[in-house]
Image 1 (cartoon, rainbow, N blue to C red):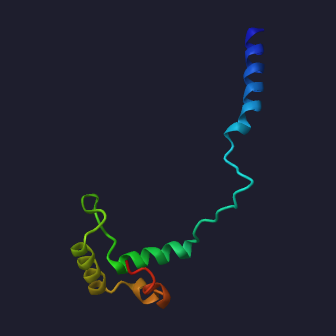
Image 2: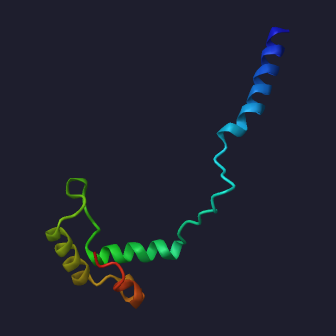
Length: 94
């Protein structure tokens, strides 16, 4: 009998307290994430800018690493390089 009572109390407490842990905010607009195409474009741009690849010991990459990475990407001429939209090549030059 004690176990049934404990279970009932625990279930009631969980049902009453579960809205306290909800992560919804009616006043905030729903945030949409990036599309797959946008993420791919950002990755392509990061390679073209020399930001990728890098290692943990050199993050964020310094100017020499970015220059070397840009040279490597241009030298290998990857197939995806031909499919980079012209607008995204000039957007984030930081």
